[in-house]
Length: 448
Image (cartoon, rainbow, N blue to C red; front, top):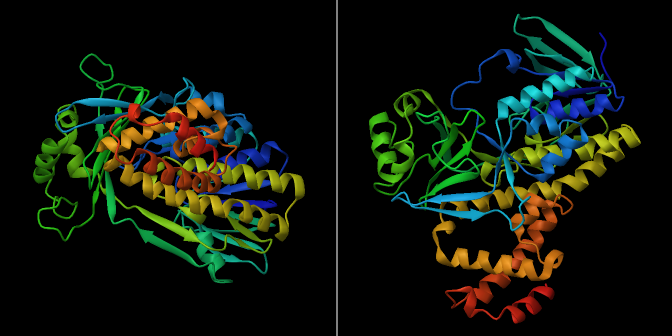
């Protein structure tokens, strides 16, 4: 029995990036993953939700020396393209500057790149090894493999990067209560697709995240380098309201097709694989995970979804996990493994994790409903006018989250709530930006 100083459970995005960064900086680390090597396996249909890579995540990749590699298969999105039921579109830009874009990244391709880089840095990765138990007194992890064998590994620090259903978190809870609780959203998702057109090109604008907002539900589409779009339908799992659409009521593929054709006609006409996908792509589960305690003295700690899984509506789950990676890696390399180091890591990251969880839930309401309201667009206009006049003294909340990694999620949430109250007050009773006294609005914004 032998093992590294640091054992990371979970070779997904956060785990593989952390292993890469630690190994590049001279740490002894091994990575354990319950599933087969994804570079040699086909990703199951309907489970690949594209990711939105923002500046927080890009900074982490840059620090690990991987940003240029990832940019090669990333596509920039300059804004939201809103589709109404008649097929009319409206672009709502993410920011006022040309460099304020979000990058569409395929989860599978990113994971493969991270694993390649981690192996290249000397990380030993054990695929098909599922955590069966943890003895924290002896500092031993016991894994079972696909062939029925077992592997016992000694560790100095165990890190759980194994997702919302974290096996390491469950093992930690046998030693101390972590107060982990999952709050279901009540809505699920189904992945669909828009393939390249007959000419082999994109069928929609590739420089936008497309949204079909319909009030209680919506569909989105993100571009891929092969000129297809990955689409995701978000819909209530069940509904007590008569005739309200839900995955429960629309289980029959023919009924779901009729619903989609009625509500998203300009998307459906481009979905040549729709019938196959409705029969075969599963409905995914959405929830928020809150965990009060992320570490077990100096023996174990959780990062990413294992500690704070969120719903995907702000595109920040991966970015938040990558921030965890940077914060933890820096502390371990610079200060070593200790309870004080892990306490310090959690003290910094937990308030931001709670903040982005709240903002992700709020952004679902914005994307599926508020973007249809003229008042919402007036507020956006005023936000941009204040930002143009005041610069760093007034940054809209969305821009703080997506383009300003120097501002924590917790601070962005706090400032954003104050800004929201001001913007609603300043736009009340107005229908256009010309009706608002911008000089007075600037004075009020400076007082926030």
